[in-house]
Amino acid sequence: MAKTLLITGSSRGIGRATALLAAERGYNLCINYHQNEAAAKATLEQVLSFGVKAITVQADVANEVEVIRLFETVDAELGKLTALVNNAGTLVPAKRVDEMTAERLSKLFQTNVVSSFLCAREAIKRMSTRYGGKGGAIVNVSSAASRTGSAGVYVDYAASKGAIDTFTYGLAQEVAQEGIRVNAVRPGFIDTEIHQLSEMPGRAAQVAQTVPMRRNGTAEEVATAILWLLSDEASYTSGAWLDVAGAR
Ligand code: NAP
Image (cartoon, rainbow, N blue to C red; front, top):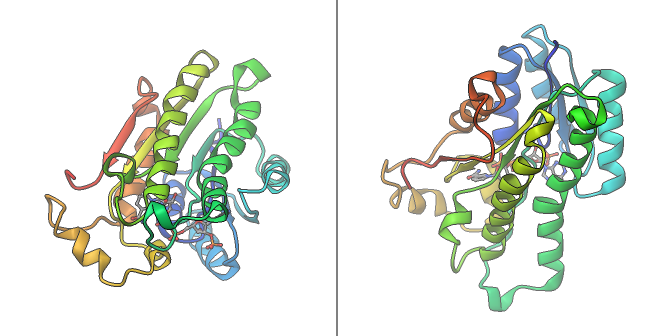
């Protein structure tokens, strides 16, 4: 059976590295992005060099109508979905909880949490044996922040990833008898552009000093963990959180 994977937010960073590794391993791919069309096209070009089928689809995964359009486009252009990586996410400027507005919190939770529920819902309708599907795998991209709490920096972001951990465990049990495995990766500090959003220059070097391995991770190191969780090698692994955080 052809392997067809949708990775949300795969124009850049961890999503992009995952798309490239998945293409190398023979997955047909949907590269979703929000605003950076040039980055999505560049990723598509590299993915196509592996000889797989692939498309780019612009859609804000925080928006329900756009999520539905995204999955319908995959149906029409790539066929039966077999795997989903809920990777799209955002970070926020560093603030204490006593400085956070309701607007910031709603936007963050919509983008980091509601989006994953909506995409999982659409994936389940296509993969679950309950709906006539043949099963599949979902990987959610959480964060080590769900364990550390990110005090004084972005407790809201950390809490959004805590929600993803709980979502992963609960959903894994809900669909365990329907042929779908659901897992999460929890990356530590990974060298990508997302950190510009925290408006804390120098944070990368600062965090690296707190990591037992004394370095930050790469997007490729997270991608290999995601690909393993998606693969048949992980056939008895579901409801798991895989830390990719240099022993932090
Ligand atoms: P990144 O380099 O900033 O890339 C973010 C990707 O998500 C881009 O492709 C972006 O699209 C897309 N995106 C953002 N908001 C979106 C939306 N509303 N709808 C659709 N796509 C959207 O980020 P990253 O570091 O790779 O992070 C990826 C995931 O890993 C996130 O969930 C993040 O929380 C998590 N994570 C990252 C780290 C880290 O240290 N980097 C650590 C732990 C967890 P455009 O290119 O169009 O903007």
